[in-house]
Amino acid sequence: MFLPAGSRDEKGMAVSSRSHVMEEFRKVATLRGYKEISTPVVEYATTFTNKHVGMKLQEMMKWFNAEGEIEVLRPDWTTAIARALSTEEKRPQKWVYQGSVFKRNMPGVEYHQAGVEIIHLPELMGESESLLMAQSVLKELGVNNSLIELGHTGIYESLANELQLTCTDAERLRHAMHDKKKDEVYQIAKDNGSKETASEMAALVDAFGTMDIITEYEERWKDRDSILSILQHIKKLAQILQQSGSGEILIDLGRVKNLPYYSGIMFRGFLPESGGVCFSGGRYDRLYEQFGKSISAVGLAFDIEVLANQIKESDERQRICIIAGEESLAYAEQLRASFENCIVDVQPEQMDKGNYTKILEIKTSNGEFEVIEK
Figure 1: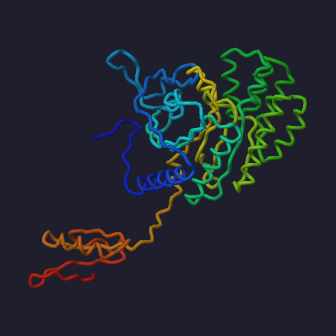
Figure 2: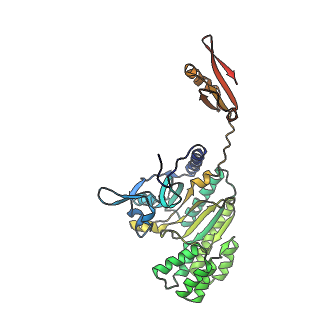
Figure 3: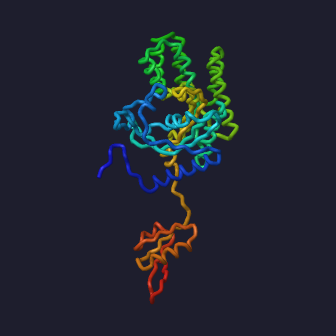
């Protein structure tokens, strides 16, 4: 039997590594005072395609229900959790989730995530908690040299608002900035505004690097009060992370959001050796506007597959094989109990010795069981 395109079976180390990541994540979350939340796998499409979220229906796993409404497999945790929390009382809350999202626009259908959603906390406190929690998870997994990248939606948007952009050109400009196409960014901006603004937009493509970028642009934009306050906010967050022992902090002032609901700080975690993005997230206060709410909200999601690939198989426990027949299965189970904290595998015949520290065979002699080491 075959599977649909994008679906896959997983076995052995791939499954156990993912389970290990999720166990460590849950342990850290519990110790940091988070509560668990889960949402249905099946949701109405409009939960994700409305103007506040802006996800594309063609990228979802979808069908029509008996009433003619479109239902989808959950494509996004943050939106689903916002729906679930929209009626909660207004008090600081920290939630964690683990589970799958389903999308057609990537090389696969099902993606495993674990993440945090924090609401009703002051901005800086919620953002730092998200990132410090992420650092704690990575530390538990033995990942000690990750990089954190900080950006902010307000910088690009502040400059883009100075341009007279049609919807089409606005989308072209956002894509060009996302792809770091400096010449294209300059040309689109110049065609829809002044050369000065176009030059500032194009410069954002290269506004990436260490904390020195902040210092440089504080001087460059000293007369732009709104952007200056954003830079100072990023600096405060970076200082909290550095004082808490986080690794290297990178700044990308040209980051653009990939979903409409992001509305402030955005961040990503990178693994330097592979370049993989192990977590991403940011502030999404605007997401709650669809429920008539004004809520401080921030969160991030871990890519479980990326983290699972960092796990090395290093179980130092003894592996013991007990060879038994039908008549000695009960005795083999008693024998298993004598090997505390060992991996004990009962098999009907001798296995490859290379897989085991010790191989024992149960034989019957004069009606009694005898254990022989192979």
